[in-house]
Length: 124
Image 1 (tube, rainbow, N blue to C red):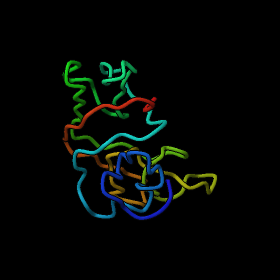
Image 2 (cartoon, rainbow, N blue to C red):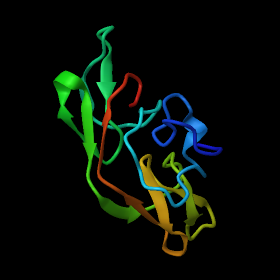
Image 3 (cartoon, rainbow, N blue to C red):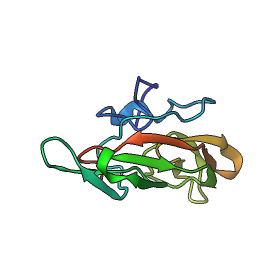
Image 4 (cartoon, rainbow, N blue to C red):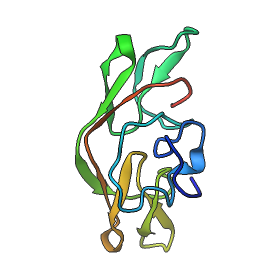
């Protein structure tokens, strides 16, 4: 996911590069989702296409395509699509999931705060 934070970028509404260096020390906020997020299906959009939540989220209200993510900590891993957060034992870069921040790079710990956002097509 590449560059700096853009509006809606942590879950990146089309700016898949929006999250990787983007969250810094900021807390997750409600965001548009981005292609390849890989979360659960959550209703359909106005065109009738399926919409999906982001990882670490649940579909809380399918009629409004609302996804909810709860606060949690987890270990970063290669290719997660979020901000870079240290390296693993094979010296590969590790990344947090969307909506998360790298809270401790030395232990590859990612932190996500509770937030709500709208699901969108193509998120997974």
